[in-house]
Length: 277
Image (cartoon, rainbow, N blue to C red; front, side):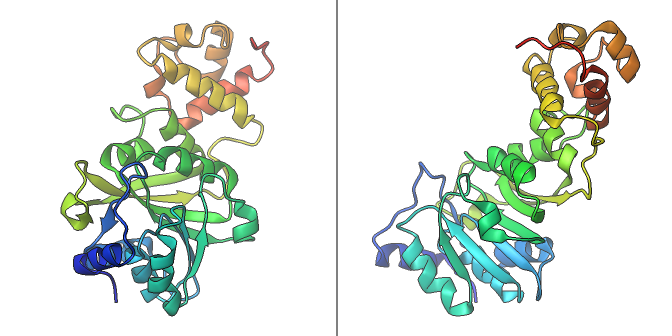
C-alpha cells in the first residue's frame, strides 16, 4: 500500500501538522508516481536503500514494497511520529537527523547502498555534492529535484545549465534525467517543475589519481565564477600560457566548453605551479 492524498491530509490533521515552506515540504500523494520512482531506482530484494526526507512515508512505502531494506531519514521531528506509524510496521528503519550533518559512515557502514529521495529544493545541490565527495558507500542515486537543478546535475559541456556542479557530478559519476514529475502529484502543489535524475557512481573518478581534486575544483569554481570570460582571463594567475598548451586547452575557451577530463588535464599541468593564497 502507499499513501493517497486523503491519507496524507488525514495524517497531517491527526498530528496537528502542516507542510513547512521553510523546509520545502511537498508530499507526493500519487501512488503511481512513487511506484514509478521505485521502479526507476531499480531496487528490489537484497538491496539496501536510504531515503532522505521521508516525510510522511509515501515514497518509503513504495520502496519497501519492492522488497528492499529501507532506512528512512527525516530531519523534521514533528513528522517523525506519523512517519514511524506508517513505515515501521513494514520493517523500515527510521532515523531522525539532518542529512547534511549525519555521520554517514557510522550509519551506512560498508556499501553498496542506493539513495532514493524527494529532495527539498534548497538543499538538493549541496547534499548531492557532499554525498558524492564523502559517502562512497552510496553507489547510485535516484533523486527528485527541481527541474532546473536536475538539468544542472546532468548537464554536459555546451549546455546552458552546465556549471561547476555539473563538473563535480561528472568527476564522480554519470548522471541522466530519467523522468519528469508534474506538480499536481504533490501536496501542497509547488509552483516549480520537478524531475528525476539517476546518478551512478564511477568505479574510479573520471580524472586520474595524480590530480589533486581540491586543486581541480578550485580551478573549476574560479573558471565558472567568471564564466563569460575567456579562461586566460578568468584563470589568470593560476594557469599560464604554457600550461594551457600542455593541457591541450585553448586559453580563449570559456569554462562551459570544458569537459571534466579537460579540467583534469589543466589541473595536472598546473599542480606544481605557484598558487596565490
